[in-house]
Amino acid sequence: MANDPPNGLDVLALRDTAAVIASDPAKGAARFHVRTLWDGGTRSRSTVTGYELGGQVIERRFEIKSDEPLELLGGNSAPNPQELLMAAVNACMTVGYVANAALMGVSLSALEIEMQGTLDLRGFLGLSDDVPAGYQSLDYTVRIAGDGTAQQFATIHEAVMRTSPNYFNMAHPISMNGRLDIL
Image (cartoon, rainbow, N blue to C red):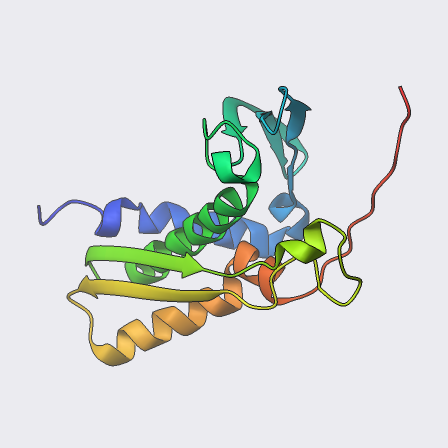
């Protein structure tokens, strides 16, 4: 419909939010928390109970399950952590494509992100100190369609790579500050 917000986003609200954060950067501090419990075997259950935005706690409730495939000694009851990682990166970039397109007045008719990577399980299993436990690279393809020009889609793509938090987290080293509590 002609009066529907572009790509389902309220662009005025998005711009208002950006203006509020620009005028008071403390309002842009978003703190997320996920708690994960072992659920037997290779299964785990993660819960999200809320997040904090600009110092305000906002309650939410979600559960995310994880398991390994049968071939990796799991029960194949849910996506494994690698699939969840890729899904999280793809979902974050999806938000970026949709929002940037909407801000440019580009209506999307299709958007798909496909990601893949290869792990060498010798690293995970501790069989070789020369083999990293994680990915050396991830490959992804974005398929996008809508009423934008090739140049607009290229600009949107560049903006996503510049501003997507999970793209940033995967493309740049981040500090992992672990603490062990013995129960």
